[in-house]
Length: 283
Image (tube, rainbow, N blue to C red; front, side, top):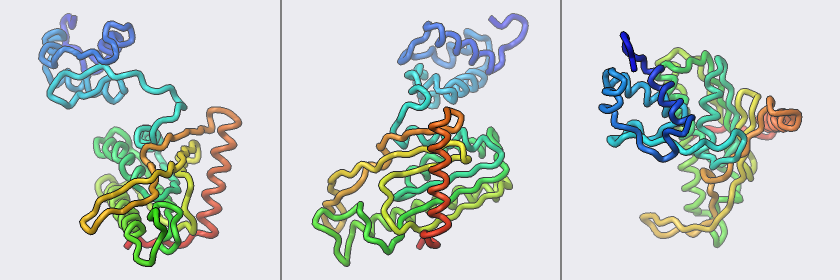
C-alpha cells in the first residue's frame, strides 16, 4: 500500500477513517491489533499508535490506550442534542479554549462539573495542541451564610447541619483544585490566567456556563432524596443530580432565537456579578 515511501500517521488515519465512513468498519467493531496494522501499512507501531490516537480524538475510536485493540465508537450525538452535563461540557470547553482569548462564566451550586470538564482542554494545552494567550474565568457559587434550598436534610436544617458542612467542604475543595489547575498554566505556559469567585445570595435552580460570549449551556438541577453514609452516621437529604442533568446548548451562530438567549444570559450573569453578589473567599 505504501509504494516507495512509508505512510504518515495522518495518511493511515485517513485510510481507516474512510473504512469507517464506508461501513467496512462498523460501530462496536474491533480494529486489528497495532502489530497487524503495522504489517499492513509497512510502518512502525508508533506510527500506528499516532494514527489511532488521532481517530480517537475525532471521536471515531474508543479504548485506544487499553491493552486490547480499539473499537469503532458509537456515532456522536447530533450537534445541539442535549447530553448529560458531565458528557457534554468538556467538548464545548475544549472548543472554547481553542480561541486565543478564553472567557468562561459559570453560575452553579459547586464547581465539580467545571473542575472535571476543564481537564481535557488543560491536557491539550500541556500537549501544545491548543495555545490560548489568556484565560478569564468567573464563577458564581452560593454564599456559605445562606440557608440553601438544597442540599438540605429531609428533616430540615439545624444549627449544626452536617449536610450544609458537607456541601461547603465540597464547594471549597473543588474551587481550590480548579484555581490551582488554571493558575499552573501561568507558570508552565506563560498564559495570562485570571479566576475569580463571587458569592450568590440564593441557591441557583440551574447551572449556567457561558463560553466566550458565544455560547450558553444550561442544565436544571434535578432534586432527589438520597442517603449518604459517613463515619458519624447516615445523612438523609434532598440533593441534586448535577452531573447527570441534561445540558442544553444555545449558540449565537445558530440563529436569532439562540443569539437572544446567549445575550440575555450574559446580561443576567453580568448583572449578578456587578450588583448583589459579594466577594467569596475559599476557606
